[in-house]
Length: 346
Image (cartoon, rainbow, N blue to C red; front, side, top):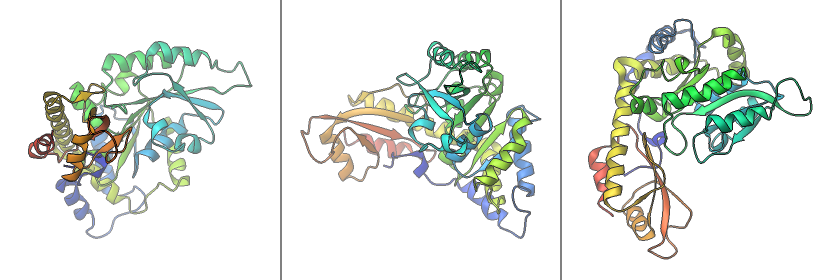
């Protein structure tokens, strides 16, 4: 009954097999291995972007921070939702790797709206006021930190605002596959066809050991990224083990199969929580649920070995009827039996 994070799930055996196969013999280092050639071709085909520059790093924080650094000068600011992943979970890494650029947080309960983004950009006019941070990149988290998915229309409305101000757009896709399955669209439609310039294409949360792709749809930034990645100590020497993970991930659409499994488990858990009378704090649209139910139920679940995050109170101390909030995340390996066992304690 492990619902703490999709980061905690196992590596898919097919991906592990590719890593083991890559361990046979020798291969050129630093991304010059033949498996990386396979990965580049697969990603370019998947994203319908034959000229795209494709790179791998081991963590989502590196992917986001280094990608944004390529589009943001130290005197600029990055526009992101108040509860964006780069604000909530990356310990100022975008600011650090960009050399000091700040984040301008768009006030919102979850998703940015075009109107509020436009107002924020308007307060940072380009090249007119030397005393203030200049407008820089726009970053969109997909899936959001509260489990919502931007529709294609919502993405396009945000990128239209950015493009009108001549600003680049970064998509933080740590849960890219989960969002894509929800929307039922192509990778191209959710990225460059919707105005995205660079995407962090996540693998770690969706069954990989530790690999994320950074994809520049305009290769103009390619060399800069290579330099920044090396300077930041995120260029793997034995790169073939990153390449092998991504190759296995993409093979026969495994990445989509795993995302479908995670999303389906989340949908089953969501319906079960509703049936049991639990309160949903947000509408789950991918593989993450925010809910609230009595402390007594939390205590039963914890005693049975369930793992998930509880917010806003101590599980062990207080009124048994008090409602405590929880975050539940489903990964690719979550089974119907595991979901049903969790629900049996309500």
